[in-house]
Length: 267
View 1 (tube, rainbow, N blue to C red):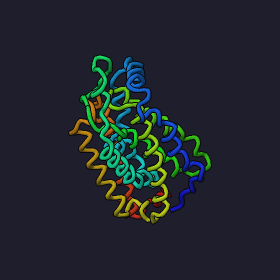
View 2: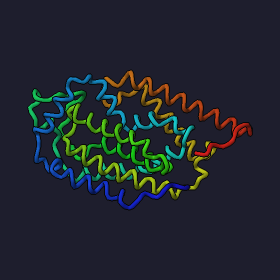
View 3: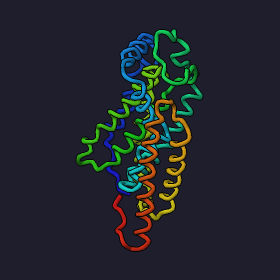
View 4: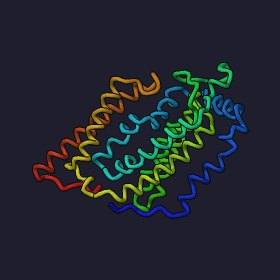
């Protein structure tokens, strides 16, 4: 599958971000920086931060990107190829680093907490890592000409990272490390995507139908499980409608292809 190679200089971005963020993940400015950011974010309504956190929730990401199943399956595969790297980075980081969360260190009266009060396994921010993995995987899977028009993907990912501080779940250092690891995971995912057989882009391919099955599970999760915060319930129902619409479009696409009444998508 053709994917534009990532220039060597861009591979330096994840380690560069990691090194530049060293004062943060070494907690030289904590807890003052966390309290300042958390306080500045406090006037913004909780549902906004809860919704942004959904961009780093696995079910949430599947729901948000579900239209790609029909409109651009290659971009769907891009972040799915990156997901194993993100899971590995998050699991290893949290297993090796027993970092307390802000609520375990900061006087809770000095901070705003949205949702469950968390105390352990802070480094790295898994939601931030996931958001940047998806953003970078999709971004680098796009055709190189005009790719820069989609830098907004990283703005959304940064919003997800900021939300983790705003809800009182993570230190700024956790977010910075999550962003750097997410960038790396996304870039590695595009290398895996480049080795994928193009037949997996076809709606009738068994692999894409497995992805559709995963979206069925996503639909159920959106309807019956609270995703991170109670404030996300209205958003979940909206995303459930998006997933359902995507699944129906995918089923119609399959039916028309089987009947020979539609051309296969280009991905």
